[in-house]
Image (cartoon, rainbow over the protein chains, first blue to last red):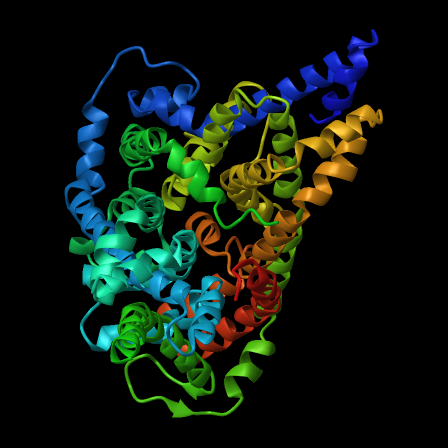
Length: 290
Length: 290
């Protein structure tokens, strides 16, 4: 707690006690926060190896034996073989479409060569917070008429449209950090705008592209409203939708429910831990002002 | 000269893909929503113009006002509770810079997991009266009731799950902002003998105020759009006590196929978010150097 801050100095004059108290209070607060953040996930971890009867008897008890049966029932019940393919196709194409469109647009908007760049920038700024429900219903029925419900490329394009504004602004900040003189030098050497973008700007944007790719991948992997609306049909289920279809049906097989949650959650946690550097930076990018 | 003009033309082509995707997916369907709100449409046949009939029907429906009231409650809850939890946590982390990376990742975990996984985990292993922690505590130690089944508490129980998932993000953002507080200002405050609370109130808070303001605006916008956790955990029940404008609109579109009414509700929820969006655009305009 920042209360400790001033008291630390006071501590030099021999009044260490209030500072100690603040330190202890801070530790207790953090410990409770960690416990609450982790409790549901810890419950998944310990119950994922237990049979239903043991979970009902005591969800807090540790497993007495390691049993992988739960996983095979969850894998079948959650249609995860279909789901993992669809999720990878959907999130992968969303990342590619978003990166391609956003990097090009970010470059052009940062360089201000086109008339109306201001209007286009403001348009994307407004699109950042546009409610999904404002365009969802007509979009669904138009795509239904075109027979595109369950088409992962159509759904990926929709997810890209939602992720585009924030991606453009993140990448635009990178381009603004690249001196104009580099463009001019490429121009003098006879490079076309495309060559300048492809061989000069794009490599310099790389850290931004990685951050955007990670954030967009996670967003589309986890997304619910668009995915549940447009990926209708057994063959089009993503991993999250497949797991959702187990809910209720497997009420009397909580072992499978917990194993399903484990299958869903564990890879994301590993993904985040490996890439944590990018996450903390990406999450607060654009949110910290002033 | 021709080459200069070709630069502008190429840059226009660079913006085109992003603009086309966004206009086709977001802008045009949003305009269609505006039209459909004045029409009778089942999503398949030709829409018929009905004037203000949808608005009259929706505004005279007590469920609409109940949903709006729930959204307002949601906003009040989210503007205070997660903000306070996150602010205290970020302040504590300021005195623990070395361990802060670990705490940030732990606090961020619920935020990076999918709403589907989070909601299903809470339903089955926490709230469920048979397999959940609440049921176990009731049977073993002291009686607890399932807050999801009571119309007076269901909204707060769902909000609790959403706060559990969301507050870590705010903590990471606030911490990132606090770290940018100029060191010399903190030093000066200490030398003048300011208490921890005085340092927070007079130095840290003014410095992070733009970030806090942005978060307040974003939380306000998303409070009127909130969908995932409500739809996944209670579907608006019991007895519509957790109905939100978003779930109300969704049911019109995909349960009773009254797309005109769905569009009307979508316009209403967008209107409430719109005021906050305008503030957001104003705040961001200076930031992105238009």
